[in-house]
Length: 226
Image (cartoon, rainbow, N blue to C red; front, side, top):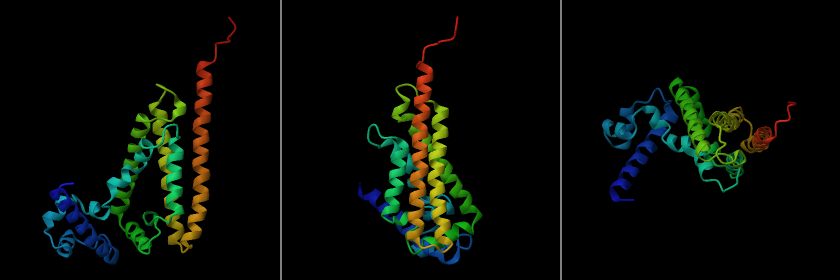
């Protein structure tokens, strides 16, 4: 990475780091971009150069989040079911109490700020939709092995992406709700991990069972009486 690119990355990080405490203390709608710029020691125009909207400033890692599931599918080991790749990544994150999943002292406040802002709730939905679309694209380019060469069905993979992304999203939403309700994070983690493992296993077995049945149907000889 060149010096210029490093400097830009440092500036972006500094702006985001200055913004988050303000949002957590005052709420998203009550903080202006000008206030963030003042705390970061830059101009308002500089903030907008790095973050086109205030929502981008709050969700400063949204591009990474949107591409995460798709990257898991693209980078999975040969022969690995894409559902298993997503499942194993989530279970590993839960097992290690990944702060990004909510195992951080400030997570409840972060979630509450989102809940209190219609703009952030809308952006969160958009992030989920873009993550699902990226996953569908990745599945089309790297389909489940069981579909076989040239057998990838675009409609099927789009629906599979919705099921996988939806299950992943639901697991994180349930974890959030349990922690916000006062359940000990470790208890919430263990419960969600067990449920998520079961849900993803059902998706995985259903995918391959359906594909195998479809293959048998399309390859079986026609025994219709003549």
